[in-house]
Length: 291
Image (cartoon, rainbow, N blue to C red; front, top):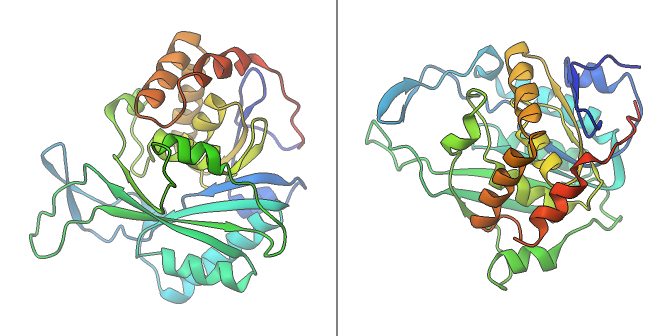
């Protein structure tokens, strides 16, 4: 049994402290979906603007620029490890910018994944470009791929269309960056908005599915999974982010807070309003941990 940093009271949310490659090598289990937000390798001393203030964009040693060869080797290594823990019909979502996404794409093809979409997340509230020497950076990319080229994957086309005003949802998503209400337990330098993860999870999994995040960070993937009635394993090396993740999951054990989160997501048209209380009522279901 691998020791957990934290487990929710109903076992739907587990955090393990450690390197994803090493940790995954210690057990065998197949996940229905993976979301990965690996290092972008862009913390090279640049600056940005947050809340009207100039700030350094260095996020930590784990995000320092490296050589192309080292980046490719890193991405290949963790993708091999994650692939071994995906069900045959599972899919993976990987976020990035131009700094890392092309390397990720090449390694996916090398391993035989089938690329399904390259999502362009166009942020509706990007920070301004301070230097005024380039176009403002306002997008991130999210690759969606399935493990097996021949094994059909799950896609909730009907729900995505309904959430998009009864029109086919395109691969360009106009969504805001993270809001203040999502930072109640602290700040993570690369925290993703719940709205983005809720869309990914609903699009590619059914309730009760197991979701893996090998670079868990502040566990936005896990919070979205718990709110939607899915099960989650997050792997993270940094103590401060594990502590933040634990606090975030404990926060939504409060049924009032949980419903407030769901109502916000419904208001922003990330989930359907009739689903809110059904999901909330099922949130106390107890799950077995398979590792």
